[in-house]
Image 1 (cartoon, helix red, strand yellow):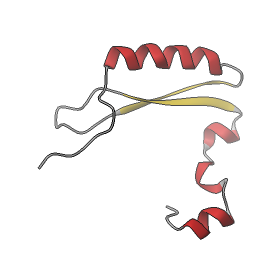
Image 2 (cartoon, one colour):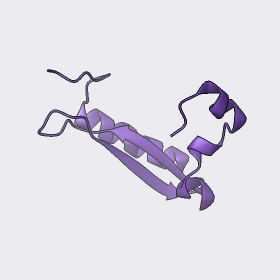
Image 3 (tube, one colour):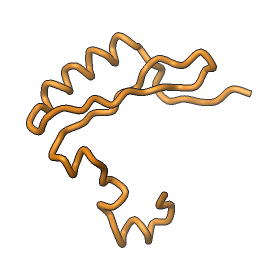
Length: 76
């Protein structure tokens, strides 16, 4: 995991490469409901290239349904 500004400046694309990019797909990560143990959860939607609007609409509907809190702080 890159943690230093200089490392990210040296390879700005590197941290964001994954199979979605390499397979020419599009993806959207959305927050989900909190788990039973109180930790947040999330879902990543993956679709063929060019389906950005469709997964954005699906993601917006799922996020509204889940109604997750904005931000998260561990208690305890």
